[in-house]
Image (cartoon, rainbow, N blue to C red; front, side):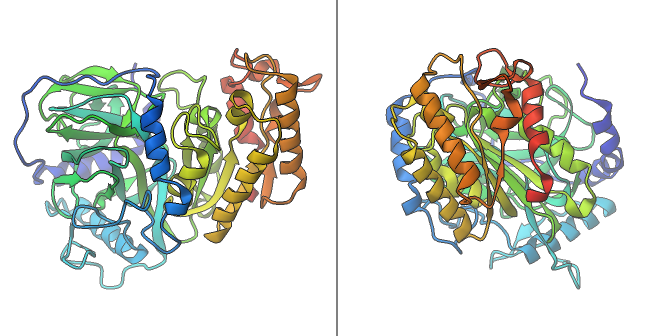
Length: 497
């Protein structure tokens, strides 16, 4: 089925200019592998606990770089070097974004490149660039070790932006990889429907001026600015050609979105969908996207588990509670809009690395260092209660205090969300319910958080508060229906963000 027509309207203006601009642009380098593709797994593939534990231990918050280091550093192992483009400065991003708009309107074929000193340059920077803008995250997905193998083929992923802006950049991550990964011929376009891209919008992406980049294990790389402006609420398509087979893939297990995989060869520049014959429901390597925005515009990170990741929604529905929050924020005046970044991992726990790194160990990478972040909404802990063996609320409260300290050390606001009911779920017991109630009482009354959003009160059954209200229950008595996730978003006081 075609996507909603409003996106085509949003991009009508840029599509014409983009077509002219890209007609003169080189779109790829290197050889094309013709080996048989290794298909990616779909659904919720199980991961070996040994691999998860190994990667979690390597990224303990004590090993994270101190405040003031590169904002894209995913841990002590991720320091900028010759193959890693660090997050650009505000002045650099602004100048590059200005140049990008000029190139798009002038249909120039020159690409933004990095000068030897690492500063972005196109050869004709604005004489007096606006220095009041910075990079703000418009989309994110926290990474983990994904059970998949890919190679000799093109991966085409669809993500929805939360806030618009010029000079967009993407980040590709090999944080959990065991070997270097080469990304060749990366493109960004606007989805028409399925794997097909809106004509004239598929643009090449460069890294330090090159169309190919090799990223070592434990590293992540930001792209150069992409010419033109991307609106908020757009379904953006990122296509990546992988010339060699990759295992131990860094990605996001439950994307709740269709990813398209090609047969053998480089199809990144193709706007047609013909070459994409396989599908998956995971995201691979792509973990962030940011745009240049006025200095007053910031982002909010939702940090959590499957309740934030989007469990219960249909594939490609974009009905996470953060999607509903984005809709609310999009209705505000431009000066009050924010990027909305989802940092939920299904099955994630605060204290132990069962599904993905523990919340404690990934908080710095997945929340604190997001571009332009001002506020973090912490909504995690129900898996520690429902699947853990705790007999007290103290370990989870201790974890909250550590995360609050990390946020405040970077002068960020952190909002605590009360834990929602799970009576009727298979692991519910009266003892676990007592722990949940004590944690919620602490969240509400301790004043440890900068603010509190009472998700529990919003979705519980008023007649039997240990369980979800029927309209908000997806059916398993833990995860929520579309109405439940929408209710969470509309419970948030936007003034707290």
